[in-house]
Image (tube, rainbow, N blue to C red; front, side, top):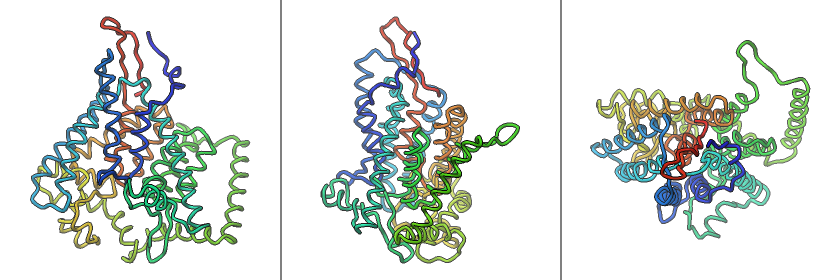
Length: 448
């Protein structure tokens, strides 16, 4: 007997799924020095294992699941090979060892057992929408608290109320290019990752109100890659060329859009001229984008130059590596190590003392995957990503979210993040539940 997926959408959210997604989204949160997003999946794994062993379940893998399994194997092999590297920095072995444990003992079992859940992707989708809403409201509260009351809401809650239980690095402001800058972070300590949550929330939510809130939150985060990505997602969502001609919305819709834009622009101009913090934040955002055209190595600009140069430098640096490292890389999450010891890098970009002393991931998926997991891991990741985009081309929310992840990767390291791994696992999840030993009738499958 076949079951319609739409009949399952009203089911209550699995608390273990929500726990895993919620705490995977809290980038920077730590418990006793261990990143929370790295251990957040353990309760879900235990739950899946319990259901798998006590129930009459059988799971099978789809083509995309098998591709991800192969990608995980390459990541583990890259980590093992990386441990043999003689040129190492602080934290090098620890990061590689944790890669091995995380992918073998956490991600892979969840990927293989995820089929015991009913309608797994809908569970993830509901969770990410709720989490995006929570983070957006939290970020806006941060923004208002700082500019109206000069009060660091994140630092107060995490450092004072929680007494540093989830770590102490939660302040939402910093000195950037010699200026005191406030960038909303939501329930994590990185404004760029907040923008990742907003892009996912924007693509999955059907509410235009919340979509607007998610865009505004990206503005509060002052994430260049977040703002560019969410604008590209809006374009691919609402304005796309057809096979024979470019299709525009109807006149009625265009009039509404123009009316809303007029109101927004006039309101913004008024606020910019008469509200000081709006003017300050707007000028600050324009400054962040303007440094893309400068060659001055002062303040934050050197960081901007690094991001721009990561892709060409990663290609040049790969050519310097031994053959085995060209294939498997120097190790996931520590691709920056290859740049530190590269002759090209020393002459072309400036690396700060922390980068020269500690193993670090490059804030660019293209560069990190290429140097961290080599040609093999790089090829597998983008093959999986484009395969998922193709497989979900009829589902705009899934397709646009994956396109957003692709765009984000040019100036942010997102491919190896726990939340994104979890997203891929739920996206390719398949179910096959047996009612008894002789009954193979109840089939529930996802669209991929």
